[in-house]
Length: 571
Image 1: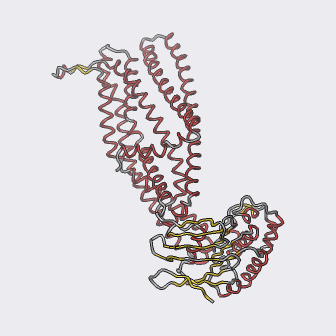
Image 2 (image 1 turned 90 degrees about the vertical axis):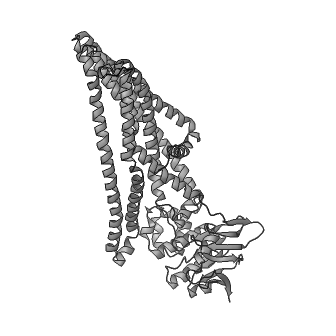
Image 3 (image 1 turned 120 degrees about the horizontal axis):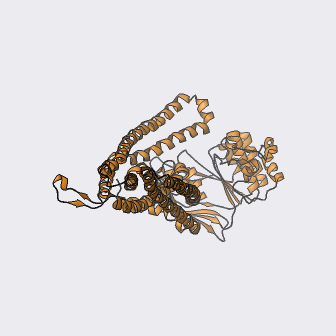
């Protein structure tokens, strides 16, 4: 288990950036407002404590005038309590909302801009980063504000009511039991000792919640991911009649959820049993201690009630850790997951592949390029490749020879390796993978993706769709849909071709980008690319012999078993 110092160190590193950000002034104002309202609520509790004594004294003395006066006083105190409570219910959640927005933008930017999301998926070092961003960032603000304001309230309550309890309890002489000692403010010491032992035993009971809560979030996210996988691959599962297998996998994942939830429930039940017993004993304890003085006539009923309330407030303040142990455990688990995500995003390979714009050169080339798998296995070594401008090139090779990895390296996204990729400065480059990404958007935006600044007219987009043999979609430009679920695999690849026709790149790289098409459609696609993108240099990765007729140069990756690959020119 991490030390308290380590816990606060992690918490500080995760929370302080927002209060130093561009939103720091509004954040600090809202935080000060939340703290001020918390302290104001404590002052209302102090006022109510004084009212409590006066009210019960009026009852004991049967003073009707004083009784109605206290009723009016209660109205004012209650009004203040309502006002401060409502105001705090607005200020604190609003701060959490703004904080979550800033954290989400910060983490999303860090996750996306440096392609951390891609490295994480390749290395598989962190599970469910989406859940950590969507859920854990919300919980970080929620638990932080809950515990911070709760702690401030506890401290303020403790200081305020310790003074009251000290004055009310008076000294306690132990002479009746043969000990010549007088304890001043004995109720204060009783509350301190009571809370100390309560906190100690609560930690023994509840500390198992920290790892259990960590695993609970993981199991829940794994189960949700499994459900999403079934939804996204519904057709493939149906064709394979894979329902029994998927049911088995989902049942296994939910079994993890069920078993861990049961362990959390049992542990929380033990903690709640202890907390309830601890709290119930605290209710009766001050009455037991003050009863002898009351029946002896040394104190009034009001003093008894105020003493009981003051003891309850002090005991509650000192029991802050006991009452919030579950929240502390969950906050710790949240911080562990966010820290793990941050570390995974920051964990970049020491040697990278540099993509350098090359002024004065029209060719794409590699220099000393080494490529490896995430596990360190070498694929290609010391590759020096030149792809001449204006010369269409086909790169082929056996499965596992590194074709797609080379494609990713040329795109500048493969992090495992070293060397240099040189591209002409200012060149428009487009990479089309075998499974194109199609955003959930209108068909118009799906075709223009990723060029959000594209000035292509609807006429040009329709013309590109028709050229890619997708004319039947021409009337659906304004339709927003999940096109990856609407279109077949071949239609998705042809939509990517239409995207290339609209984008008009200087260099077009295709990685098995027509693998889902029959040879007739494939030939039609390449004929359209050659006709309409006459100024574009096309580099294709594929294995079909039919592709050779559309390329002027053919390079083949050869790789012997257990060796790194080499690139050869095929005549």
